[in-house]
Length: 274
Image 1: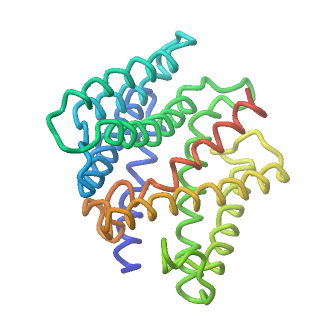
Image 2: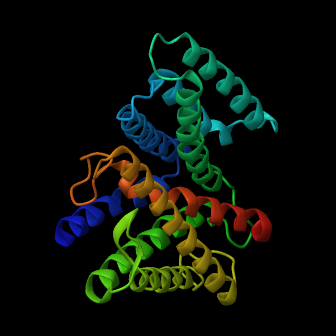
């Protein structure tokens, strides 16, 4: 199992490096848009298991619009899009000839759209940041930090939990996760973030002690994102969100930690870098 996970992860790293470092910003936006489409498709498929109307077309379209929204310079574009898109989805929900309660279907669809579309849009927002005079690649490096710190968290949590895990965290939601694994993930995240504080081509303009604090927050929120997706799958009675990524499952299974981690890095970006 771990070997398959490792091979899939290693195969995906060159792709991530390629799209993030591409001089064409739209390449990364297209990549994240594809991830968002696959993720919202898996999410909407999962909620149909509980007899909810998935609102596929509207949900996917609104998710894509949220992802590409950082390219829009209008400062009120986010609330306008959410309100307008939410109203349209609500109308669609009430016009569907299904037994599912329309407000339930609408609420679950909007939850997935915002959780996937808005959080992934923060990666796009960081990537298109022009950087600073001393750190011109700040935007792309913050994206790298988000991805690799999350991967470090997931990998160390898996390895430490598998080898030394004894104390279960939430047996009813995710029975394999342990406190030992969570601490391993925390350590792995901090180490990765500290690497990004060193003088290398991927350096981000933060001091070491900020790196430690940021690593703690990334790890905590990444694991919360993992738990949120585990709770969703437990609610629907499925093991994986999909089968696209061998050893991992679906796109949601791989990116669940990145959603909330992107929020943490972006907020740090707003507070301490901009």
